Amino acid sequence: MAATLSLLRLPILSQKQHHSYSDPRSKLPVIANATKLNIPKGSTHLPTPFYETIHHLKSDALAVGGEFGILEGRTFALIHPIVMGSLFFYTLWAGYLGWQWRRVRTVQNEINELKKQVKPTPVTPDGKPVEVAPSPVEIKIQQLTEERKELVKGSYRDRHFNAGSILLGFGVFEAIAGGVNTWFRTGKLFPGPHLFAGAGITILWAAAAALVPAMQKGSETARNLHIALNAINVLLFIWQIPTGLDIVFKVFEFTQWP
Image (cartoon, rainbow, N blue to C red; front, side, top):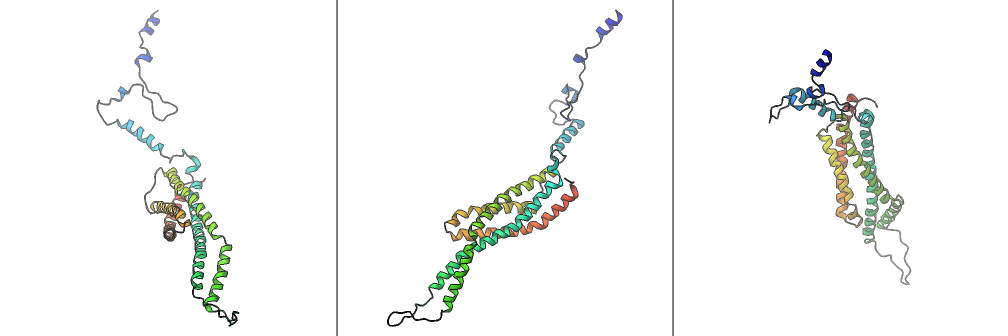
């Protein structure tokens, strides 16, 4: 009887005691009674332990703690420099194809101008043409005509268009993917020459492609601007090489396989 009465006088733990427990799904303790924090009404400052916990969770939210697995590793980090390095040489190839296609048009223009200089073939009184050695102008026309025939066989127009389309698609994709991969590894981007030049290259790709419809309609202004934009693009690409190699060295320094 005495023991029973003693138990009746004990406080009910579920009603009187307030304690904290941890949610297995979260690193942040779930506090049963917020008044235990002793936060003054209207105060904008959190207690130091609570602030440190929130700051720790905020840092963990960044993609630098292994949450993305292999996406944060060295393998995926090296995809960007390998692809962009390949696209640099592919850019030069696309430029060569474009220049050859331009040559098809300019050769024809040269031929047309030279034909204006050809003198009429002399004829005999009875109307038969006199056989004479071809003039230097006619010889030049023959050479340019043969050259143009070979250029046409190269299908440079279609090959340049296809190369430019591939360059635009893969270039824009990988330019964005490179920034995303940097965020995977570090949780932030690093404003600087490499980032800004890369953004400029991506913009120039899009701008040069936007001129294609006008070029197909025969606009010489659009063609010249297309060439100028791509020339600037190549210069920026060359400038990207040393800064890109610096980033590759940092990748090897701060990342692990895979």
